[in-house]
Image (tube, rainbow, N blue to C red):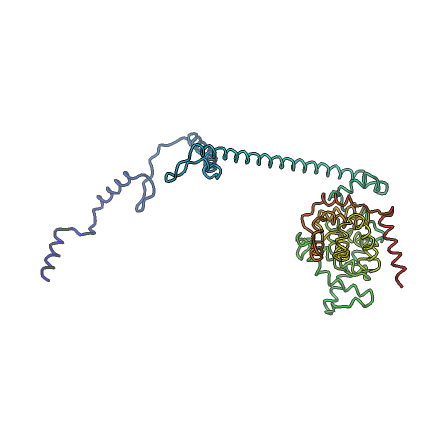
Length: 462
């Protein structure tokens, strides 16, 4: 024990200690030495003294800044080119193999060089082809815009002001077939549909008010299940069904759903019609017709057109479910189906696929639910020109467009396909098919064939 104490005392005499403090002046001198020897930058402990720089005039600072900006501006492009050269999978074929692998033979190097040149040439040709396509599309778009502008001018300055005299002229009919410009469509439909019922905006407002009262009364009494077998006036209760259908109208547009800009307008129009025609009330599918009209004109005009449109013979028969008249329409349609598409007609007949299984929805909504909205609008254009005949001509045009596909389908797939048509139907292709459909047989037009079937139905009915 005494030996350990003596050793400890001797250690303290001969050593200043492991953590002995350095004098302050010596510490400061060592720090200055470190700062001078090391490059300027971050220092873990202590402060880095500021750099000694000579003063510069503003012009020199400005010129140096601009030089740096130019350098930075040019560097990314150079770096990008280098990255492309290195990262390109086509350029890797020219690279030498790693050291640990056998070197390429001259023949292989030549082969790889030719392959690389072929790939570069193919890429160049593809780029040129895409550039030509873009240029062609741009030219077509410009041409279409010029035609549209010219058509708008003709409609507004020549045809619409003299509607009664020019509506059946060749010039007007040709423009009609090409598609009515959207900014003219509302005016044209209003004139073409007409107002045989002599409806007014005041009547519309009265019917809207009555519909709101009816809905409020039903909400208070809780009676929303009135039977449609009661007197005709009780079909006003169908206004309760409107709110269910409005939210399902053109859901992809998101403008007729609750909170959308056209939700209340569509609801008001349909409610007003249910009160205006309590004998018909609201029927599922009407919301699509009303929505198309609202998109092209104000709500009062849309109501007038809607009521007059549903007063047409074909729409009356379908919306009131007059079976005898509907069967007459189907029979007339099948005559022209067999005349224009005999092979497909035989296939449908063998599969027992009758028109009522797919065409009712097309007629109910005038194709606004079945076709893309822009294509359906063009169908409406010519429907306003040619009447109900064009609805069945359009149906045959759709069948002709997809004839090759339909011929290979069985009953189930036929029904599924025709009740949900492809969403990528192009108006130009469809109308080329419609144009080939002939709506006359044995020197009889569609209206004459339809009348003969109606007369036969009347004779057969008790």
